[in-house]
Length: 182
Image (cartoon, rainbow, N blue to C red; front, side, top):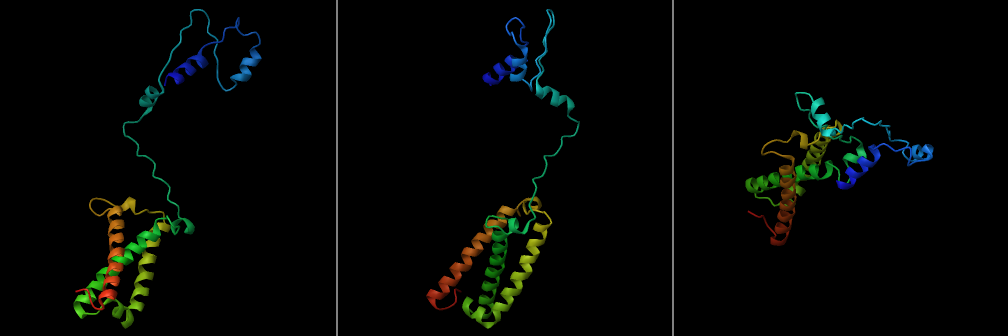
């Protein structure tokens, strides 16, 4: 802060002609800076930039600009992009709930569900949810812009992560025990 004040004082102060013999050297050094000549009784006026901005502001505060969301295919589906974890989480949430529902209703474990026609349901659901999740991302709409209250995008991510862990834990538990979980 002190350095900035000193530099502003040095650059804004007039250069005395008696101290500088060759003015062209000074203008080469400070070509982008205007160095005014002040005559004897001229006064200096310093005004803060923040004061100018406050005067020029309108009555309504402007909203900050929204960050640009990339709609390129390689950015949306990048490893750290918005789509992969969100889509996998959504599929895991549906898969975990469906696996538990079929297990409770029919008494089939996860592996018998997959072998008895579950692959076609899995592929159909995966395609449907992937396309439904990608369409807003390619239009430039982020999940964070649509999240409010309890149903936030962070809550969806955490629920998806827990569903992925639950699905893996369900498969491992049923494989080790040799039967259904419930």
